[in-house]
Image (spheres, chains in turn cyan, brown):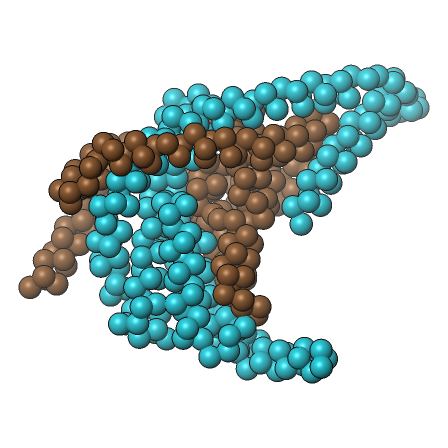
Length: 227
Length: 202
């Protein structure tokens, strides 16, 4: 998908620049041609400028990324995630009714979502994969997603973000006078999207077309065709 | 007893929030939260870590080491997406796309320029980050478009990638309503970003 979009952008871009090189202008008196290489040379100039900018931007990001990852390492080592997890538990038990409160899956879901909220990035991915593995142990149909897995998925892709570190870093590298001014808007927007994620997951799981039974039949058809 | 204490703390926080919204404008409250968040975090986390017996200085430097790698890791993606975006923009194709789309998106107050980023976001995180950086370079980090692009970037996720990786890791092939639920949440995040940015940055 991304391959096609990337290629299309380049091809369309060069195509449009090529067409504007013909310098067609239409007036009531007729169609005029004023051929020029200007659009294409401008395109080349912009290419060089942006590839230089990519490196400048990434290098400008190093300091802030180091600072944030350092702070997050302390958070990780101090077990702060566990404290947040304890606070979230009553709510999570309600959101995942299919999972027994004392099941290890409940613990790993809460840990993973807490890490995502803190923006732990790389540290939160293994936690998320573990949560998924634990939920899979409770799954009766191993190749069909459970309600709990989908709810977790929707919540983690829309997770409340407290500090969007990379974005703040890029804003700082690009010379913003107040790189962190977007923190509060991001918190609010993610709170909205998480709410929508939960509501949508709960509504859609009731729809007839998303019932587990439908998928069991489909699965058997596939198996039959294969055999 | 502990439950009661938690409820009182929660009540005080909520009361403070409501009071601050009554006394000050929404935009002011948002700005104060944005200003305070980082100082509070950089004092609270090390203090908490120290109290828990973490060697704060050593762990900080250990984590900071990764900063360089993270920044370096994004260079190839930035160059790739800048290549496509700069060709697309410099040729005038972006203007055509914006001209087609903006009558629709302007109804919710979304400038046409950020539409390509919104479309790229669920497909590729690094791609969207590249578009965001380009928007910031072209329009300025402190322009409305720059701020909106940053907020949208922070409020949505690389949904397709995450769904593929997570369900792939446990061999689940039927993801049922995972994709529609997650994409609707992304859409909500985008619309919420536009609304909040209009309220805060006007």
